[in-house]
Image (cartoon, rainbow, N blue to C red; front, side, top):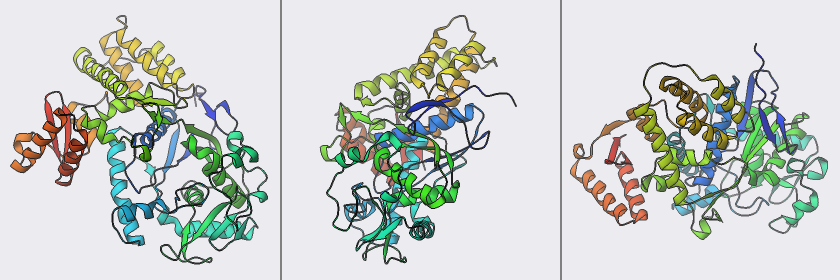
Length: 480
């Protein structure tokens, strides 16, 4: 087997850029913390999915076989990392006027899982050979894991649940290099009366209202134990890569490490930990409380392709905080349209060969901790390079796009389906009068810059079975 070019990744566990190696040569087992499906995912949430997709594509570019798991949290994620507050799924049920039952909780999750898949398909995220386990499908595995920890002396029980005793795990907090003092300074609430240590965390939450039967009474699993159980069930006791947002480092991922390694006796849980920096909007942290949350559908309602958002994300390094502005996404959209137009209009369909020098430079960029900004700059350098033939440019750009995922290898119709899912493409005039009226009303709302109304009409069309795309030639519809 030909020796691989070194792939360098920044490992949060050591805070260093290291040469990546896997437990089994040629195979990678990777787990990514997925969404809590009580609501739609905003662009900050989706940035993490694009990061993970870029990582997977890079691994595959380096000829690794990737087994990937992205979980859905559909129970157990409390509003505070300090084990306080209400379950977020319960919040979703109350918001939508649904009774607090497990059946309704799963129905609510179904809705937002469907929305999530629509968004990530629009962003050209690969999902083949990826497992998407739901926490509520692994209750028995979670109970068994808590019982193992209990038998090994790592737990204690209180009136509100079963807790992990972090004093029994001396290496707690090693991820991110957080000392106990630093963690205490960042604690959000005071320690509960029965909780022995502010760092201790819940494994099983007792709840008489909603949940499952367990040896400790009615209730539901803690958010952290869910991930450990799904990792063990889907990937094994030790994995190669674990990813998430930087907000997961201090609590969630340190908790995963502690309970997983305590239960299995094997360390490390993951060889590499990678974390994506936050997305800000107009210089502020994304927050529903301040009303600056943006969803992918709103980007589309302003006439921008979802892939323009992907392109914009790739122009900054995943470890660098990014500031989303509408001017920035407009610029990304213009650049991506220019790239697509150039690819279609200027590059022939004649088969060429990959230009070796550009290919080597691209490989070096992406293998340097996913340096996508340099890769994008190299792409444009190639576009402008008149010494490379059109056929060879085409072949080389297609090679780049196996990692970047910007849709260069798609026809117009296929790209449309890539963005909006399978279905029948229609002109507006081919639809019933009531659908035409909704489309016209939405166009008027967009002209008046009433994007909230345009967003509502898009949703109304979706409920009628039509997806809409805004193009330079007017709206196009896809019948689902």
